[in-house]
Image (tube, rainbow, N blue to C red; front, side, top):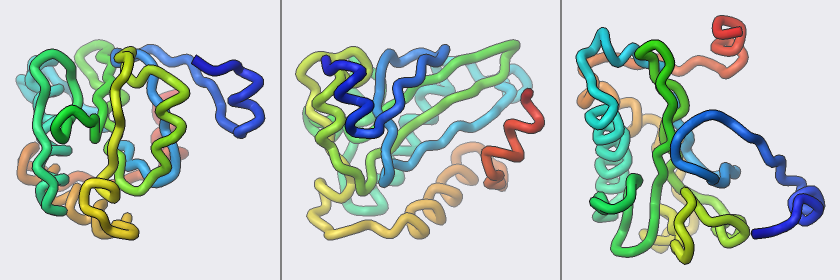
Length: 170
């Protein structure tokens, strides 16, 4: 919807990747979670995994008093007709990569420069906007996320820096 020159002026990189979900925007104030999970070993179908990723965001939103849900026509998490979080995954040899992006405290204007998830006319929202808070503390969000992950996946997940992961994948 906007030119590459426009994105360059805004210092926004355009990155082409192989995953479902079409185009999205990632920015500061967004919680991005890319679990690397062997779905076959866990006995999870792709549809079940997508459901779990959405459930993570729904439960996390509930912690902050935001009633979010699913739209049977479009993946992701919604508050009414506003999209709060997105899911975009890829599976290789039964192992998931990419994942979810939950809008916490980010500027929403850049979403108007694209069709998020390939959907025209979608209005994006954030936890900050839905709660009316000035800011939601990222540390609290991560702590709550880790607790929800433990409940849904029955495991104590660890956070690793992306450099650690890249060194093991490449």
